[in-house]
Length: 183
Image (cartoon, rainbow, N blue to C red; front, side, top):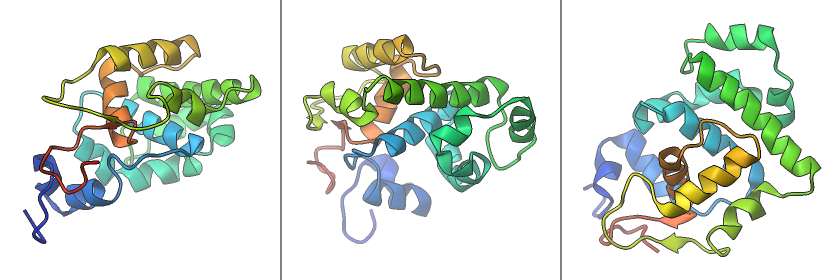
C-alpha cells in the first residue's frame, strides 16, 4: 500500500500498475474510439500479462498511428510487415490482423448508424455494473458481449478478453470492496 490508500492488490504491485489502477482502470469510458482502442489492446494481451501491454502502450499507439480507426482499417500487407518488425509492440500476425479487422468492424458499425459507445453501454443499462463477490475470468454477460462483437465482425474478443476489457473501461466495477476506487 502506498500513499495510505487501499487498492486492489494488483494495483499496488509497482508504479506503472499503481498509476494505471489509480487513474484509468475501471473509470467509465464513453468515447467510442477509446473503447475500441482498449478492446484492441486487450486482444493483444491474450496469453500475456496486462503489465506487458501497458509497458508497451506508447509503442502500440505509435505503431498504430494513434489508433485512428480509419487509418488502421486501411492497412495493407506493407503495414502488416512493418508492424511485425516493430519491437515496440507484440509481434503476433494473428493479433495484428485482428486489430486491422476490428478497425474495419468498428467503422462498419458507424456506417450502419450503430454508435460503438452506445452499443457497449447498453449491455449494462448505461451505468457500471458493480461486481459483487469473487471476480471470475469471464461471465455470461461477457459471453453475450463477445457474441455480439463477433456478429459484427470483431475477432480476438472471446469472453475472457471481453470481461477484462469491460473491467478496464468501467462497464463493470470489480474493484475490491476495500479499494478506494470502488464505486
